[in-house]
Length: 142
Image (cartoon, rainbow, N blue to C red):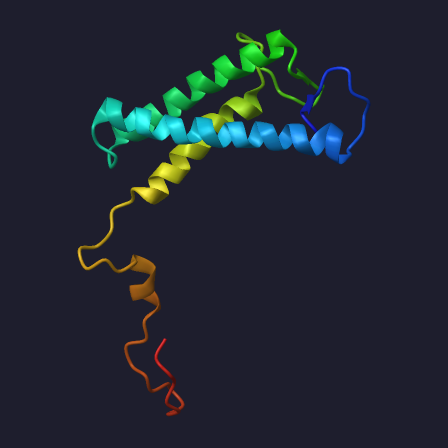
């Protein structure tokens, strides 16, 4: 169920009517997400802090609100009845949450602390300490 509708377009799901405009919007969302993380890093000067995560979410939410308000007022798109709207700002909650939260999740994964030896913590948990199984058959190392 689509949350937005392009102005003046029939309800069609062809390449020209839905896929290309949504592709351009997705590419623009990626650009905004890539701009939000360095902005928050410059503001907080640290990437492994709670303050950095809060700065990513706040700057993403503010940019999402600004983009959505401009696009709706400029007639770039409108919302369907399925889109939950913010009662104060009259912008869609889903696109603002996307631009606010996805960069924060990506930054948390990218800048998570790693062990000093460079190993990924999950690899150590999956390592077999004893290559001989309970049955006595030797297993290859994982």
